[in-house]
Image (cartoon, rainbow over all chains, first blue to last red):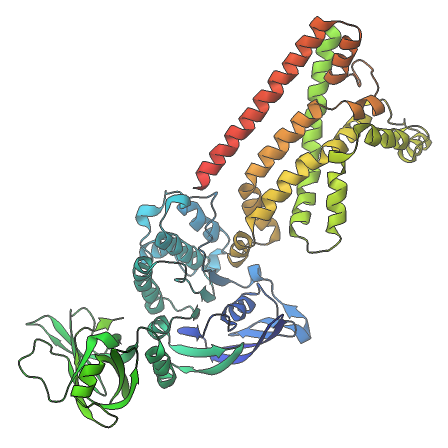
Length: 356
Length: 225
């Protein structure tokens, strides 16, 4: 089963021209720079904007087929939408906001129970609070729970973290990931943050200037995303790994990927579980021989593929680790001392790994 | 206070209350439409709604008298149908008051609806709320401050009508002799004691009403923080 969309929309100074079919399970991330049409595409999916002549099918339901005169209005689509602004109803408290969504779902269509949503988003202590004095992160969690309680058949998230400070972002992301793991609702997630995209995506849709540049499983589009991740101010790599061993004595997990493995603290994930890890270029240092007697245990053999000066003092080094791209930010002096150049074999010492 | 004056007080209250109810009922859909429509001709409608603010009450009163009187379009039609024309009647006054206070009801409501923005309504739509439910369970409660303002301003403004009433209603005790007319009568007859009592009462009441309105508004303001 799949979701199929065709939208063509002209606005002053902007045109959306999208024709796309993607799987109806997991998270599809629409990724691209601001103003590339991601939000407009999402609004067309929800029926909040209408691309005349458009077509939209979600599984077996045709929500829009203008040539045949079909356009299901938003409130009959069973579509969940989390906006950048939480948009909580100010005249209702937290419980009232959730009840608003619950009440409108026919019993037969109810997929998410009240307790489940409250637990999933950690809201039990907030239920009787007024919406006015919640923090930004709390508001967005309420908004997400409210959307889930409307038992959507398609969940759309429009940069749900964009309006939040980084503390609130860190607070919300784990909730979104649990959503990803626990619910079987297809999700379309819009973001312009590459790390967020890498973290959430099962399917990645790269958009630019109102058009889809590429669409496919995250694994296939990794190379494209790697370029984007390396190109941003805080260069980073996202690596798909699997839990391969559990070390009970030191309470560590071994995460394997084709280029090597990482040891990370904790043993809370089952063997074989897919884990995404994030490596910041600043946390990767380089050595010409395998370092001995170091406290750093995550050491990977790699080959330099490119060097790009970042500023007068630092150089960004691109590494190939058996097909996986890593980035390392070193001083220009170190790069000269190690005579780093494309083709040189090095050892990458990874000081810190974030498990996503 | 004479019996006539007491009758005038009740008549005025009845007129103001009826005007307020009618204007909230008619003004709400009109204000909603004005706040939401993208039709370019809406400025014409907005100008018509605002006319009573700038027109001399006697002008409005004069046209209404012509329209509602026995020879007028409305009055003449009613006479032909075997009824009675509306000049110098309570119903005539009510129609005049509704028109005269229209901007006082419509403008606060329109502002309140416009300041909601699209977001809450779009959120409600994605939560499966249809247009009617969006209006009654989201737009109305969120615009409650506009309703309080509209009701208070309409009521207070109707209490203070004079010119329109004199033109359309004249001065018939128990039918069209409202407080402002009674005060005018007393002053003309040099009955300053009565004029002062009614004027003072009206002043105090209007002041109290407006203070209450601003207090309520401030509470809404706080609740929003």
